[in-house]
Structures are given as structure tokens and as C-alpha cells.
Image 1 (tube, rainbow, N blue to C red):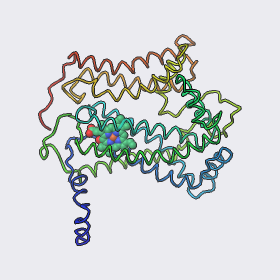
Image 2 (cartoon, rainbow, N blue to C red):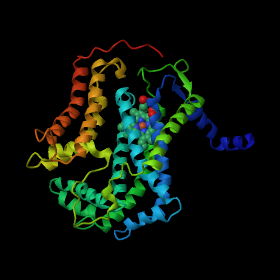
Image 3 (tube, rainbow, N blue to C red):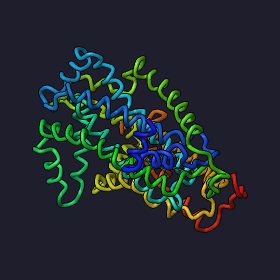
Image 4 (spheres, helix red, strand yellow):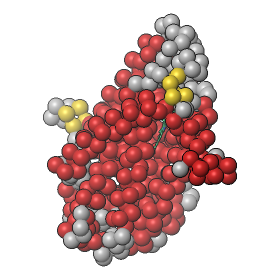
Length: 403
Ligand code: HEM
């Protein structure tokens, strides 16, 4: 075996690559479980591509056949139900992993120098994932697929001058119809493969600057680090085991917990569902869209801009945060802002889930008002983080010199 490896290594240094980038790769010795979510996202990405590939072998991207082809997969294809439930619930678990991954980065200042490019690549991946999930949801061609696609693609019409033409171009006609479904299928197949490529660059950028850690200080190699294998291979495997148990619970015992019942009704362009809701992972952004959308003239455009901005603002986060300290563990004010941000994201999600005209206390507090306040709180996070760090209002606690 070693003779064969020697022969290969002389021509393509595989062993050296594995040693330097995997087994002996120096990793901060104090990484906690929040650092498991990158590998977990990677695991779910692989599950999604593997199950998606087999689903695509039986799915028909045709407006007349799509709905029934999904039922055919569920009923007739061997283990088709498993493939479909793994894939549909995989989307949910993908976003759980990625949201925790992003929040971990925000809390421990992983976006700070020298990891800005790594962070930006992450945001690009996030946009790609949202596009992929949105188009995937359209494929079963149920009521929610159809009307979700109609609502979201229609948002483009708010873009001045070209908006209306753009929507027709995306639809491939004058309504969401067969050509739309066909192109969404093609893009839904292609995008995850591109995501794999971008994830490779993400990991390349990570290995160029190395992992941040809960203390947030730069490390002395050897003194503060451990080889990735066996210490973190074991830790990642343990995390995967726990994550898979929860995932399998949903796949086997509550597979429709995250699927809207309306999506088991075939798409009907003549009948709008009473209440169109996106998947849970889009709800906070949907709430931001609606908070602005009902304000008056040009509000649709403003709503769309606010929604895109709510994610795009992450790009400038590395420049907004001026603190001399990375990790929020030693930053009392930033830490409080962070937790308000997290709770507020749940409030936005809840507002997004409810109908736009809902209210609390028998009409006393309209939900749209709560949505507007929450939207303001969402954006205030970024402004306040900048203010307290740029004006030196926050006094960080002393940070250890080494681990
Ligand atoms: C398919 C989606 C993604 C995959 C597979 C992925 C994978 C990974 C992996 C394996 C790591 C190293 C382990 C870890 O630190 O958790 C990592 C680190 C990191 N990722 Fe991602 N990632 C994804 C999406 C994102 C997104 C959306 C962002 C941010 C917007 C992001 C930002 C980061 C940052 C800043 C680090 C370095 C963390 C540190 O060292 O503290 N990633 N990613």
C-alpha cells in the first residue's frame, strides 16, 4: 500500500495535502460546540445533493405532471417517501445549521479581520441557498408552491423601468406556468453544485487564515492548537450523531411538520389560498418586506430593498464593528445587543407567519406595527454596534493573552 502511495505522492502530493489540511491541520484547542455547525452544514449539503439526485430521476418538471410525479415518488418508488422526506426536511435542517453557523460568527466576531473574505463568501453561499430553497419549493407544484412563486417573482416588478419586463422574462411567459417550473427545476439542480464549488473556496479561505475561537485572540501554533485529527474529527462526528438523531426524528415521525398542508393541493392559478406563507426560514425577511410594503406609494420597492438589505448589510459588518476585541464574550454591550437581535429575529418570524391584518388584544395592537418596530430593531443592531464601538462607548473586559 505504501509503495502505491509513494508512487502517487511523487506525482500528486495527496498525503501531504491530507496531512496539512486535515489530519495535522492546527485547530484552536478551545473550540466549543458552536464550531460544529460548519461541518453539519456540509453534511446536510451532501445529504441534499445525494437525495436530490435520486428524486430527479423520478420527478417530472412539467406543470401537468409535476404534482403527480411527487405522489408517484411517495407511493410507488422504492423508498421514494424516504428520499422525499429526507430532502424536504433536509432543507429545514440546512437552514437551522446555517443560521446557527452565522450567529456563531456574529457572536465570536469571526467576521473580523483577517476573516472578512471568508465571511463574504459565506454570505454569497447564503444567498445561493435561499435561491435554491425557493426554487425547490416550487417543484411539487402544489398551491403554496405556485402562489409562493407568484408572490416572490412579482416582487421584481417593483424595480423601476425594467421590473415588469424582468418578471415576464423570469416567468418565460405572462404568468407562473410550465416554462417557469422547467427553468426553476434546471436552476434548482444546478445551484447546489455551484454551492459546492463556493464551499470549497470558503474552506480555502478558512484554511488560509485559520479558525477563530471563543476567546477571539490570535493563536500561537503548537501552544494553543491541537491537530484536527483525532480531536476534532471525533467532536464533529459526535455533533453529526446528535444532529442526525433530531433530523431522523422529523424524517420518520413528523415528516410534514414543516410542510404547509396547502401544498398537498395541486396548483390552481384560478384560486388564491386564503393565507400565503413562505417556509419558516424566510419568515423574518418576509416580515421585513411586509412591514415596509404597506406604507404607501413606492412602498413595494422600498419593501424589496429593505428585505435584500437585511441580508446584504452583513457584508459591511466587518467594517461596522470597530471594537479592539473580537469575541462578544468580553464585550458586555455587544453581547446584549446580540441577544436582542436574536429574540427580535424570532418576533419577526412570528409576525411573518401571521396574516398581515392580524392583531393582538382584540385589534388594539396591529401585527403590522409590531413588524415595523421589529424591523427597526433589526437594523438598529448594526447601527448601534457601530456607534458603541466607533465612539468607544463599550468598555471590553480584559481578554486572556493565550488559551
Ligand atoms: C453551505 C453552507 C456552509 C458550509 C457548508 C460552511 C462550512 C464551513 C465550515 C466546515 C467551517 C469550519 C467549521 C466552523 O467554523 O464551523 C466554516 C467556517 C466559517 N464559516 Fe461557513 N459554511 C457555510 C455557510 C456560511 C455562511 C452562510 C456564513 C456567513 C454568512 C459562513 C461564515 C463562516 C465563517 C466566518 C467561518 C469561520 C468561523 C471561525 O473560524 O470562527 N459560512 N464554514
